[in-house]
Amino acid sequence: MKFFFLTTLFLLSNSVFAQDLNYTEQDINIDDHFNGTLLLPKTETPPLVILIAGSGPLDKDGNTNFLKGNMLKKLAKSLADNNVASFRYDKHSLRQIKKGNYDLNYTFDIFIEDAKTAIAHFKSKSQFGEIYILGHSQGSLVGMIAARGQVDGFISLAGAGQPIDEVIINQITASAPQFTEDSKRVFGILKEGKTTDDFPAALASIFNKQTQPFMMSWMKYDPQDEIKKLDIPVLIINGTKDIQVSVEEAKLLHTANPDSKMVIIEKMNHVLVPIEGERLENVKSYNEPNREFSPELINALIDFIK
Image (cartoon, rainbow, N blue to C red; front, side, top):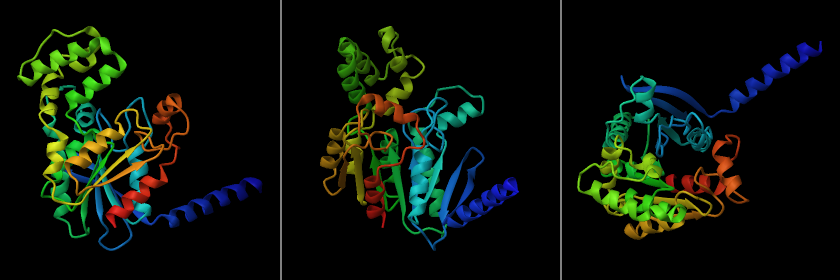
């Protein structure tokens, strides 16, 4: 009898939870090589946000093989709870790996083309109202380039305000200053369109020969120049506990586009959760999917979109 009662309670609970969802989840195939997940609220012509992930082979939920924080999945569900549709997708690099293709001979522009493809697909549909691009971290630069003349608004979430070479040099100067001059020298060579084997072994993860062409293609874009070109509403968000992209980066973007709205969220880190402690808690949070988002973030997004 006890087992029957618990089983019945479980089934009833699942039914209630299912009824509470005010959105549907759909797998969308844009073409043979590009698909993702659409969260669609049960409202007429909701606004749509296309989510663009940051650097690395991230899946549509914002995860890698060794870090599973479900950042983009949680963001999509938070938007859906507020009657905002979203589309998210695996990054090009991860799609290649899933197909067994470990060739890294692609450029930064492939990410921009993916974003443009997603925009074109959903602009052809009549089921949405306004369309927005939201780019997180590296995705901020991807999104602001793809958004120009194509969407109704752009959101930069923890996006850098400097070209990637300057960002990396600043990070190296802060963490390993003995390699600052070597980094500047190598980036100088890459800016000339040349590759090199002359770099410290400690910097191999940044400057290995296979990724240098990709780095060249990324370096050519200056976020401050790109955000100036946007004549649509722009929202720039950063958290004070972000140990990867500082608040100063957001200020650079805002200065470059003074018509933008900037929101600085106290205690929010790079994966969009509030941090009360110091670096250890901050780093651990990257792999803690049950952490709740900063409520100020969701409020800022919904205020901007609606």
